[in-house]
Image 1: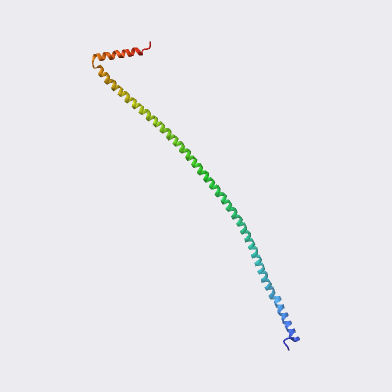
Image 2: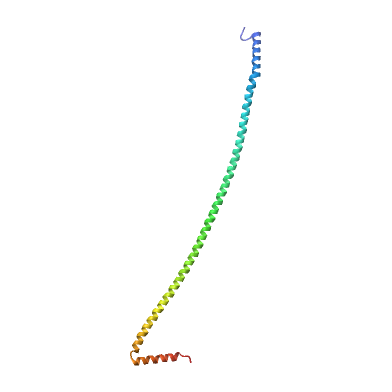
Length: 167
C-alpha cells in the first residue's frame, strides 16, 4: 500500500465514513450551527436597527437642543430688553420726581424769602416810625418847653392845615 495512491478498499471506507459524518453533521450539526448563525445575524441586525434608532433620536435631540438654546436666547434678550425698559422708566420717573421736588423746594424758598423780606421791611418801618416818633417827641419837648414855643408850633400847624385844605 502506498501512501500516494490509496487502495480501493481504503478509499471506499473513507468515502463511507465521510458520508456518515457528513450525514450526522447535516442532520444534527449544521442546523444547530446555522441556527446560531441566524440568531447572531438577527442580533446584529437588531443592534444595527437600535443604533440607527439611537442615532435618529440623538439627531432629534440635537435639533431640540438647538431649538431650546434659541428659545433661551430669545427669552434672555426679551428679559434684558424688559429690564432695560424698566430701568429707563424708573430713571425717567426719578428725574421727573426730582424735578418736581426741586421746583417745589424752589417755590417754597422764594415764598420764604418774600415773607422774610416783608417781615424785614415791617421791622424796618416800625423801627423808622419809632425813631421818628422819638425824634419828633424830643423836638416837640424842646420846642414846647416855653409858651412862645408852644404858640409857634400851634401857628405852624394851623398854617400847614390851611395850605393843605382844598379850595
